[in-house]
Image (cartoon, rainbow, N blue to C red; front, side):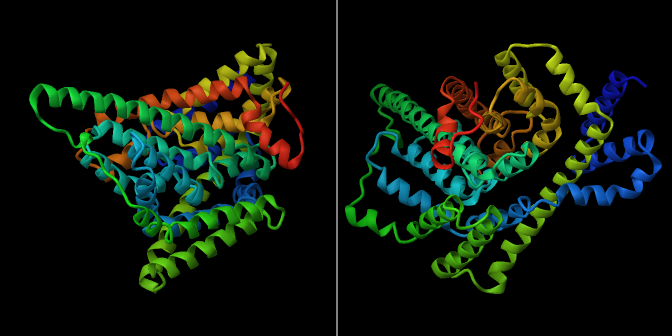
Length: 453
C-alpha cells in the first residue's frame, strides 16, 4: 500500500471511530491497536502496554494529577465565590465594574486552579446570578464567564501547556512564562469589551426608562465602604500568595514543575482546611475522588493519544505528512495560518489534549523548518484551542454554563461568547505582529533562544 493510501485510510478510520460516539481515549486506542494488528509486526501487539508506559514515562506528566489536585481543592471550596465577591466590592464604582470584576476573578482563579471548567463553575455559580440580578443581559453574563474560564489553559499552571511542552520537547518553564503576557492581554481585551458592552446596555436601559418609566436594575448604583473592602481581603490574599509562591518556586529555580505542583497541592489543601474548615474525611473525600476521576480520564486520553502518535510515527505517516507540507513550499505565514485554521476546525470536535498529541508530530517539524519559535507557536495554538472551548458544536464551557444557569437559552449563551472568540483571534494577530508579547518575558528571565525570524 502506498504511503498516500495508508495515510488516507488512517485518517478515514480515525474519523469513523470519532464520529461513532466512542469516548476519545477508546477511539484513539482502538485505531492505534487496529493498525498495529494489520500493518505492524505481530509482536507489536504484545508490547502495547510497554509502548504506552514508555511514552508516558515523563517526569513532567507527573505534575498533571498534582495540579488537578490543587485545582480541585480550590474549586471545591468557597475560594471562587470569595474571590469574586472581593473583586466585585473593590471594582464596584467602575462603570461595568461587575462584569470587569468577573473577568479578573476568572483570570485569578484560572491561574490558581489551572482548569477552565472549574473556573466557569466556581466563578459562574456566583457571578452569573449577581450580574443578572443587576440587569446584565443573560447572554452577556454567560459570555463573560465562559470566555474568562478559557484562561485556565493559558495562564500557568496549565495542563494543556504541560502536554504541549512534552509533545514539542520544549522547556515547560519558558512556556509557562510565555503564557503570562498573552493571558494579561486577553484579560485586558475582555475587560475593555465588558466595559463597552455595559455602556451599551446601560444606555438602552436609560432609553427604556425614559420611554416607559420601567427602571432596570442596571440603573441602580451600588457603593461599598472602605471597611467592607478590607473585610473581603483575609480570605482572598492567602490564595493569591499561594499563586505567587508557586510561581516563585518554579521560576526561581527552587523546585521542578512536578515538585512545584506537589507543593501547590499540599498548600491548597492546607489553606482550605485553615480558612474554610475543610479537613474532615467527609469534606476531603469529594476532592480526592474528583482528582482521581479527572486524572484517570485525562491520563488515559494522554496514553492513548501517545500510542496513536507512536503508530503514526512507526508507519511514517506523520513524517510523510510533514514532508508533504514542507514540499508545498508555502510562505511561512500562509503555513502558520493553515495550521491554525486546522486547529480551529479540530476544535469543533476534539479537546485540546487530543489536538496537541495528535497533530504535534505533523505540524511542528514544518513550523520549525520555517523558522518559527515553537514556544511562541505554543501560545498561539493554546489561544486558538481556547476558542474551541466556547464555540459550537462542542464548546465545553458553553455546556458548563448551561449546567450552572439552566434557565439561560443555549442560543443566548452562544451569541454571548462569539464576541470573545473574535477578541481571542485579535490577540493571535497581535502576537503575530509583536512576538515579544509571548517571548519577551521568557527571554528576559531565562535568556533569549530560538527567536522567530
